[in-house]
Amino acid sequence: MQAIYNIAEICAQKGIKHVVLCPGSRCAPLTLAFSRQGSFNIKVMSDERSAAFVALGMAQECRQTVVLICTSGSALYNFAPAVAEAFFSGIPLLILSGDRPTEWIGQQDGQTIYQQDIFGKHVKRFFQLPQEYAHTDNVWAINRAVNEALNLTNNEQPGPVHINVPLREPLYPVNNQPIHFVKDVRVINNTPKEFVLSDDTKSIFTKHWKQYNKVLIVAGQQPANLALTQLLQFNIEKHNLPVLADIISNQHKLTQAIKHADAFLGQAPDSLKESLQPELLITFGGGVIAKQVKLFLRKHKTIAHWHIGTEEQQADTYQSLTHTASVSPESFFNFLSTIDKKENFDKQKKENYQQVWQLEEQKAQTLITDFFPATSLGEFEIVHDIIKHLPQDSSLHLANSMSVRYANYVGLSEKQSSIEVFANRGTSGIDGCTSTVVGHCIANPEKLQVLITGDIAFFYDRNAFWHTYPLPNLRIVLLNNHGGVIFKLIDGPADLKEVDEYFVANQKLSAKHLCAEFAIDHLIIDSRKKVNNQIKNFFENDGTPKILEIETDTQLNKTIFESFKKKLKERYES
Ligand SMILES: Cc1ncc(C[n+]2csc(CCOP(=O)(O)OP(=O)(O)O)c2C)c(N)n1
Image 1 (cartoon, rainbow, N blue to C red):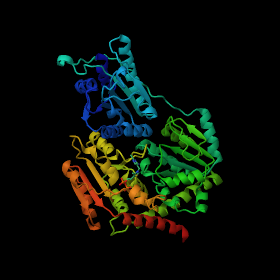
Image 2: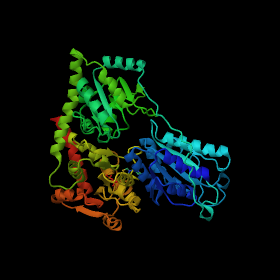
Image 3: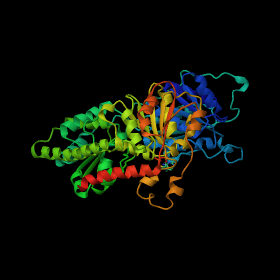
Image 4: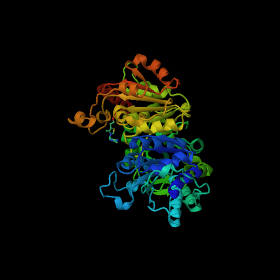
């Protein structure tokens, strides 16, 4: 087993800190190697689906590869939702699965499935280790594969990598022999590729830059990056650029960001959309939440569209992509900051274009500030109140469905620049939102982690709490409308006679019993008067995890959301 035990030593020497382990026999050599090696922070969780999302949250928080270990059989399949999310969001995970030697697959030997390449395209690479480890070639092959896998997880395009480890019995050390770690195990270091803008690319871009004055920037989902935000700010001011920034782009520090495009584009007349139509579109980061931005840019197509980034996949979200520049957004915006300002008539045109966006943003912002009803207890106004009261230096996590959408309509202010926003938008699943936040809590116990979630997403992922790790920094706002309210709010299902039974899928739970089971403080808001007081108690840092539950009425939520859209529309009718 020495070659297998060495896997833990290689990981340790390559700086891996966190390991999430799911118990089982087939993976026992891995379990023992990682636990006895001594340098890892190991967490044990029995539900593999939840464990994988916890690992994902930890990797996202530390911006470092997390190792995820499980036994053979369906255990491994349960990692799949988080693996897919990690793949599409670029989060580094190394998955190590114990397996039977290949001759035992399909031989009714129990707990055996086809594990090779099980995640298909949802991992960056799959490695099958040799199943005999004594020959020096196999020792070399295992070492090489583990090094390569680790390097792949966290290079210029991070993501999940899977190593399947066939293990022959005996799986446990005979006579309890100690495990020996080879300290001079070989480590292959990886120097990340350096991407630079070639002179050719610079000159093609500069030609476009000179040619077009309606230049629009769209920031997609990305982690907070102060240096990049400062560069963007410089470019906005120098070149008069409108920057569309969803809440998940973490660009709320920008002074002139357009944060409410989703709100106003949804209601804007065609004439306005025509004047907002860009000639040159520059995008960076992942996807955007704003559906109206996507529809607008697909219909009112730009002439040139440059996507900046080192992603392998070429996403043509707006069906207008003409160029990709494989450099980091920092180096691109650095280059942009060196280009001369436009002068005279061109300068005027650029300023005008920026002003049209700016004006719409300001009007939407004013409407949103004034909109929220003071007495009703709908979930939109609760999200608004929570966001306004978020403590500095906390993280805001948004579950899929209406939570992330409401929050995007509300937005964060420039003053809240120390708050980082996260959401599982790689696959937009409702399945691991809570576990992901738990991973953040475990990896960074100093930071307050606030999740806003709907009830279906919340109860779906209740095994997020099923372990022994304290979560004093966890705060969950549970918008309990007893079903998937989104299906009542979006165009399409809302008016179908089947909507309640087959889409909303009512459920009756409240978090009361769950909170008692897992020793979580359960706070309730059942009237608007209690909001301020309860929010204050909720954010208090007294060493206990807390869930703030608000039972809301679907019809009221629908009425409030519709009245919000109506008010946005009325602005254009008057
Ligand atoms: C794993 C997964 N299953 C199903 C869906 C489809 N889906 C999207 S939103 C939603 C309902 C979510 O309800 P809830 O969490 O209560 O939020 P609300 O709609 O009330 O805001 C469903 C089933 C999904 N995104 N992910």
